[in-house]
Image 1 (cartoon, helix red, strand yellow):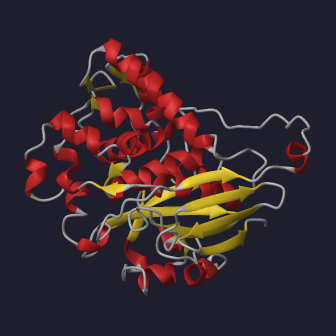
Image 2 (cartoon, rainbow, N blue to C red):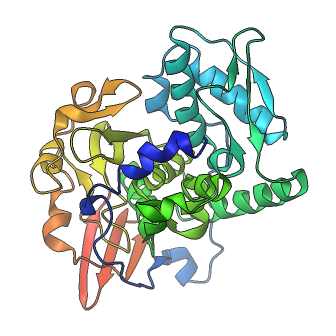
Length: 350
């Protein structure tokens, strides 16, 4: 996406202090795994069932809400991009501009590398005469291949924190913590500092790739980074864009058939205060964002999904603002949170 195409997204966090954390605090969080009974007795630990990175894997929440042809076009562009090609044939239906905007959204949420290393102009990138969409690379092919290989390793490191046999709640919570762990708000992407960045630097730092590799970003790419990890770990997830008054972006995630809001921006540096919120929480104590103004791919999210389940409400009263370490116990399906001298155990079972 071009720098101009993302100015609005960047400004979304410039207009209000609430979109970013008030004061970044350095932490040294750790995710550990409790030893199983077999390993404590010296027996061989069973092979872990891990998720594999797939940069064309699209969130089920996107699949059920995208217009016809959008996902297919996005996957075609991603596949061509990963081959270091600069164009792809797509079939556009309906309004071409909306189609292009939605396709770009799917691309960025599905393949974090794209926004970091390529420029796709949603306004002029599609040629209706040839039925092709074109983009430009910011880097030469050799460097792109190197960065791609590095990113696969980085994504695998995140995903190795969870297993296929983990409950959805454990996967969602552990990956959320992996995102917010030592996450910093990038104040260079707001206000006057933004205009000093080159298009390539702005696109890089606004991408979910940058959040995952550099632990820095704003509300848009933080939410897209969490969406990416959830998708890779078979957790339906989307983003919610609030345009009314104070603009902001966060996540909606499905866990065990229920829907919740999560805000990695407001939990940056190790808090779980905004994990598993209801729509009422979001409108009340968590920012005052009107439920009717949260959208994704043209839908009003709380009108499409019931975001009222209070399963995670107990975390608000039990956890400290800063968590220094979490510990997972797969046998019990629990997550233990340690902050300062405080400890709390949350049951992740259904």
